[in-house]
Image (cartoon, rainbow, N blue to C red; front, side, top):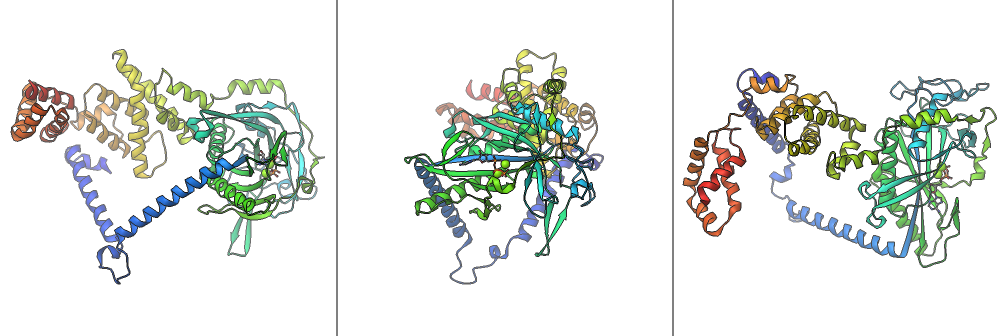
Length: 588
Ligand SMILES: Nc1ncnc2c1ncn2[C@@H]1O[C@H](COP(=O)(O)OP(=O)(O)OP(=O)(O)O)[C@@H](O)[C@H]1O
Ligand SMILES: [Mg+2]
Ligand SMILES: [Mg+2]
């Protein structure tokens, strides 16, 4: 740890030493682990030299991508793709939907299971009212009309992960209808969808999750009933999406909204959210297709790809399924309504089963569960407490108060479930107080400087250490003090980065104390010292000076600045002042 090396010498020299040593050992490691084919001559004449092989592979990949793009464009002109998405998200609740068993997923398998969850004969459902709160927050955040009365239904199918032989869901009378989600260009929608597209949401329904199956030694299945009856919200979009990229953007946005309104705590990466995509194609020139869905007619036959667990899988599976359907239709075949699966890294969807018509599920109202009646007072208190929507936060961050580029505003909102944004606000607040004596222009620029440090400098350290976000690793106060010192030119940029690394590695001293004790505060060079330094680098490079003077190659001044920083005492030469003196000496 860096902290332990501080005692024996100056922080700067020790860090350089530490870096050199670790750089050397990593170089060594690279060499020792390099495949032997680098070091040995080719064993036989037909072995292609590696560089050539890599070049050919890169060329093949480029041509494959080009071909895929061309096929995509050609097929887009001829075929219309339609996609509707169903999202299943695990609600942030302490209990299951109809029992008081805990929802914790980290406990040992089959430890959180009530009799009703296992469908023991005679056990009865006891609806847990608290599970409704995150569901309602989701419905409000998705602009839905909340139904004052809704009911639960049984959807029958037989599978090992469903002990009752039916799933309790809301088929006939869901608790929320007619919502929408707006997707913007910055959400990553396809260019042909323009700056904004609105996707209507047909309904939100409460339902039970299934048990988790796990394959065991190939032929057996292990079942963990901890997940069974975990409260889920199913969100169903209308078939209004026409590109794979927009479908992926839609799932990403729905996840962001659910996280930000506190309906869920985990996203796709942790298995807390799964997506099913429904895909159909239709030849543009031909008569409308014979299928319809909730008032939208003229559609092609849909297939459904179940259980997608990443945004990339959503996009890739839709591309593959669209291409498969086009191929079937172009060769005179018929697309069958079926459920299909997708394996990550694959290029094709695979048939799982023919799609049962809704009749086969034998939907029926659950006779054991009374209707859900939602009061206006509950709704208005939830509406008042719902956090600001991500789009509104984004507008604020790119607006005049924060003036951030969209490329910074988006990750600030999305990273670490909002914790990064909270930290950023803390840094800005403290920084504004520290810089209260500065002029308006400097103070206005603080928001951008802070986002650069929070996202890029701190982000790079986290990435390098492969470490998860923790606001205490570098306390907001420390980062604000560091930026304050830098803004006041009390330290140089490289020193600020070095100190950030030191704190990141565990040094807990307050920044002013650390800078003082390690002698890192900038002791500005005098004018005479700048002049002497500039003269020495000028004297060593007369030709360059001549080029700058005669050909007006002012860009070369930067090279001289670099020389001055290298030759001068580390951390004491300021680039702007160096350039000022150089201009004076060379261009006068
Ligand atoms: N022809 C079509 N092409 C593309 N998408 C479609 C088409 N018809 C319906 N969809 C989409 O399919 C989805 C249907 O979801 P819904 O939950 O209503 O039925 P389901 O898939 O039979 O139900 P579940 O999978 O929950 O048993 C919606 O997202 C809808 O937009
Ligand atoms: Mg559905
Ligand atoms: Mg479905």
